[in-house]
Amino acid sequence: MNTVQKLIVTSAIFAVIITAGFFLLRSIADNIPVDEADESGLSGEDSGSITAMETISEELSYGNVIYETIAPTIPNMPHVIEVPNSPAVTVTTATTEITLPADTETQTEPLATDVLVSQTTPLPLPPMPAPLSPEAEFIMRGDFAAYKADVWSGLTADDITLIGYYGSYNGGSVVILYPRDYPVTHDIQYMEVAGYTLTITSGSFELLFYKDSSFMGIGEAYALGYLTDYDIFCIDYIMNPSAYEEALPH
Image 1: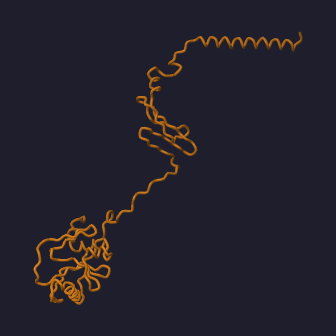
Image 2: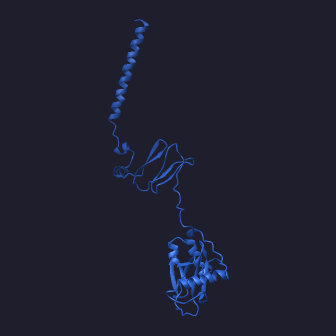
Image 3: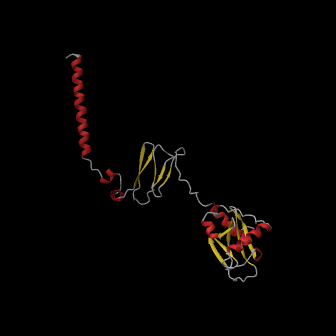
């Protein structure tokens, strides 16, 4: 028998020995009893909990990777899952709080800022109006006598008194006029205009808007656009400044 033949025979013998040893070890392993709890890696109590657990799954998309968080109902188990290889991403399923990396682009809903200025910023208080010139007041009193001719006939400018002048707006004036020496009622009159309550010292008086020799009620002037919300605020302040000054900080 030459050398090559000896090597072939020796290799075959080793192969048979190795194969027989493998099958022998496998047979021994198959006959060893294995505890069911050891196979599962859990105690009987925990195994039952896992079988009956509820899972809450949320998919959080970060780039092209989707992380699925599972919150089992195992007692005392923290519902916080750290995502591998992303230490800046923490998912808390109990409160659904998500902290993203600092360089992650986020979008924030803008705050509602389109509210009335008067609700956030105090309106500027107007200066008290300067008195009308004697000439302008005389013309106004004459126009008022003509405006009320069907109520008080025969009256002239000299019979009319300017009770109050509350400023000029949009080319007109806000006034109260009344015949001199005529009786008036002693009640207080309140008018709601543009959300403001205007206080008039007698139910006999009319708060009027005077422009181009014509008169109209203050509510009508506001409805027609001759007066703005701020104009009504100014009129209210001029008629009763103490109500505003008491509200100012001292």
